[in-house]
Length: 405
Ligand code: NAP
Ligand code: HSE
Image (cartoon, rainbow, N blue to C red; front, side, top):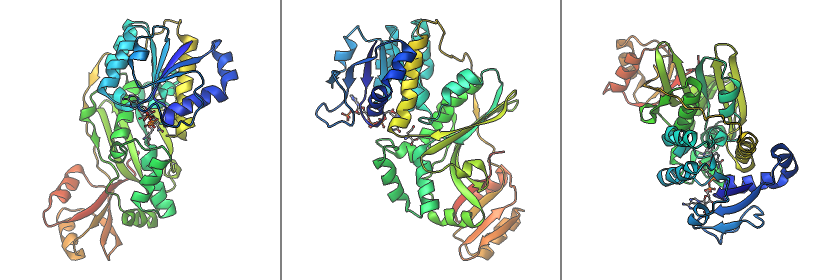
């Protein structure tokens, strides 16, 4: 069985290492000799963290396109439009594709699935959401007897690593981000990680599977962690609250809500103790009730675990004639209500802020009066919008508290 590996970076080298280290088990499971025949990279001279054996290492994708002995392509190189076109060209020829590329999949999964189904090919993407944590196939294959109403979790390893380093180890934001890059958790350009875009892509991919609906990513509200201050993390800790970047979606009679934002959770909440690069996802189904999945959200071997598992399953079931999961209908995304208790830090003097809060009938307790920091009782969206719009108020930070119910 000939495999082309597109990319030999953090994940690609992990794939080679897992295939090498676990070859006996993988050969037994697949009943095939798996040969990585070609590897696509940008720089053929770079030193690699994996023994690539006899594979042809090339920077010319045509070496792979023109080789019709390739049965499966593993894409772990990133990129959106060109990568989608390339993978679509393989699917059109009936070549199976395994991809970890959530950036591309969140935009193009519907068209790629359609192409795969028309050509009896498989498109597998377990590693695209939450690294080594098995969530894609859990929703698709193990919870498919349920009507799913909620998916919620910590879906980005880099931001969880940064927030944990700040809260637990007292690190500065930039030092924690640099360390996450060094460890291979962050994307090459980590903007998408810290601005919540990566988590948005993942919650969209999971929601599509969970609710059997196509979802337009541009409709999803997102807020990242790039403006998070250690001051707020420390203030929150004194109130037994922990800041986490959550991706959340619900689908019920009220329609679909999807959002990504940093939320303060009670420190006793299970998600509050999911730290560093670990991810966790809750899925609620009408038969099973609440389920929780926990595991490493990023990393070389960790992500390769999911990629190679996809590879094994593609080989095992390639002749079964099972179509890829493909929703028929598109559903519009409503914004998350945002209502609830809020932590707010003002730059205003206490009396100035208090007067405005009282004028809007917002009930609150004072957390710190040096800088005026409060925790409100549950407020409506309108009250929150009014507070943010009041030109006399200077809000330095605001976070919803325990938005997970
Ligand atoms: P990476 O370390 O930057 O590796 C990317 C690899 O692809 C490199 O080997 C690079 O070649 C090659 N490459 C990139 N663009 C190319 C192009 N246009 N032509 C030829 N080769 C190209 O990235 P990574 O962290 O392994 O991530 C790979 C994919 O997996 C991304 O889609 C990422 O979002 C996803 N992912 C990553 C993780 C993680 O923990 N890192 C987890 C889940 C999913 P050179 O080595 O020569 O530069
Ligand atoms: N940059 C991503 C993260 C990699 O930090 O979660 C895994 O998708």
